[in-house]
Length: 137
Length: 147
Image (cartoon, rainbow over all chains, first blue to last red; front, top):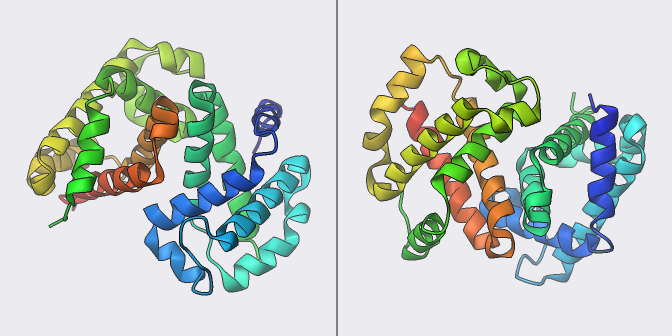
């Protein structure tokens, strides 16, 4: 469960990204494909070369969805309901995207990515994963 | 046996040469205890773990973090024999410490994030991929002697 403090930290950190959503999304996906090659199996239809427009476009979508989630921390289930359907039937929720997003945030924020922020983001991503997996069975 | 390319070995030793084992070890262990509080159960005699500040400042946490990362250093010197390097530690973690190997994976992921905060832009995707592979292999070697 996200505490009030967790929510505040998450919103603060998100606020610091200032318009870099598309890059952050693209980089997160790129790192995920490189650190966890099996994740590529879900994107056989994508051009996965460096700078791919599809990776950029998709990264932007993913981060936008996370942004929506962050604006609706008190009601993640409803906010992500549609995405839950998609992930339940077509995808697979693993911790790899969350790990890569954290690494991207950490490389951009350095020491500001404190243990408290790390903890809050980790809890948030767990909550998102949980909601996305809701419709599996 | 795990195969390491010359580039991977370079990415590992290059980063390793630039980090403080004491600082990174302490930070990684502290973050493990903060982000995944159930791991505190293994450190009952460490004293005050009541808040992130207490954990970060706890001298036993710092000392143990340094120990853990020093052991990592051994792995890096023996990339071609990780199983052998970690054989005894694996038995120890199973028989004496009763640590669920899932926690090795968690610590590995946290170490990667700590490296990201320290090296920022230098922690490139290729760097991350290599280090994710390393922490995964170490976790596997540590779990190998479980029964």
